[in-house]
Length: 177
Ligand SMILES: CC(C)(COP(=O)(O)OP(=O)(O)OC[C@H]1O[C@@H](n2cnc3c(N)ncnc32)[C@H](O)[C@@H]1OP(=O)(O)O)[C@@H](O)C(=O)NCCC(=O)NCCS
Image 1 (cartoon, rainbow, N blue to C red):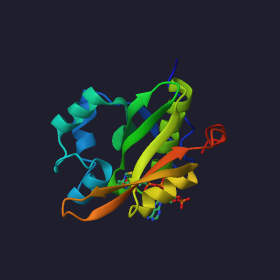
Image 2 (cartoon, rainbow, N blue to C red):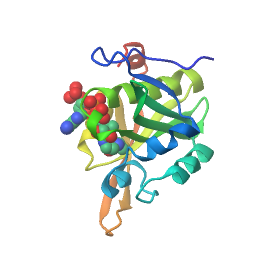
Image 3 (cartoon, protein in one colour):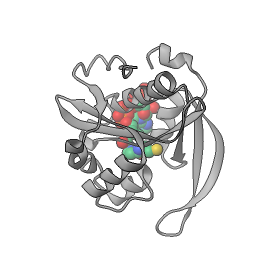
Image 4 (spheres, rainbow, N blue to C red):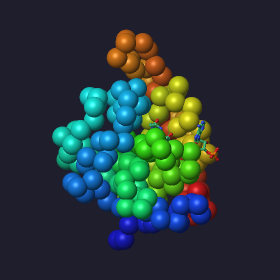
């Protein structure tokens, strides 16, 4: 089955999503510029993110996907806990600092939702820290709704709330959001 490809935002005609290859690993790692951002994207990771950690993700996760703008890596996401026919978690969602706020995150998550639904017949799920309002608003806009909350600790020992969300509106994919 071919990889679903959604129409990119009108302002970004050259944006495309492709399967990540080993030659993308260094550019993926470079998307994360602070320890705080790495904690939001991959709490188990170590800053600075590097090729070896991305190779580890390639070995343990599925559908590693990069967003390319003029052939430059500007975004990344993947799937984990994949149960075809049931559910799959979208993880490690990140957009390059200089590319944020232009619709790339929305297009990336919509692409991963389409991968889950069309390739795997799986309900898309994801987890996001409660303080990450930017990501929460994005996911909620795309049709994700909370179904659970779990306490987690940051590296200072502070307790945070990790919100689990599921995509409840399959029609949203057909609508192109
Ligand atoms: C979260 C993230 C992926 C969003 O990507 P993006 O390309 O900046 O987002 P978009 O431009 O597609 O915006 C989509 C929606 O996100 C929300 N959003 C984007 N920028 C925002 C901002 N500065 N403040 C609040 N909400 C914002 C809005 O709901 C926006 O929709 P709108 O433009 O109609 O208002 C990106 O900011 C990022 O990489 N953040 C750091 C890593 C991270 O937190 N990843 C998620 C881990 S769960």
